[in-house]
Length: 97
Image 1 (spheres, one colour):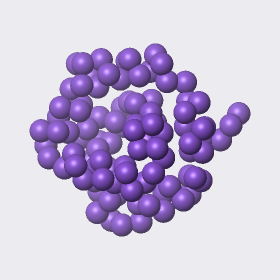
Image 2 (image 1 turned 90 degrees about the vertical axis):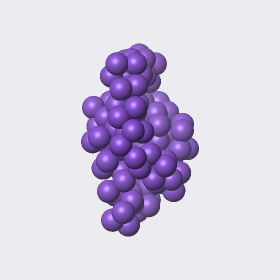
Image 3 (image 1 turned 120 degrees about the vertical axis):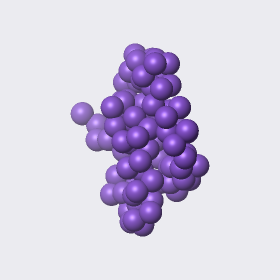
């Protein structure tokens, strides 16, 4: 899947708002390695799967819990240690060097 095709999945304003909340409030904007791994492996590069995930997290408690798992729980640090970016290239979401 091309990145452009992935982005077209977010042509709906509601989907973009949910994504923005996940990135801003959920803390994924501060943990790009986790976000990349989530897209590549958890959602298999499928925008519809990411949209469903964003919608399922649509409550303050879930977003707060995610942010705490990333920061206090060390999830962001653990992912940084193992995530090299190759998964994003395999999914076609990043160009190969």
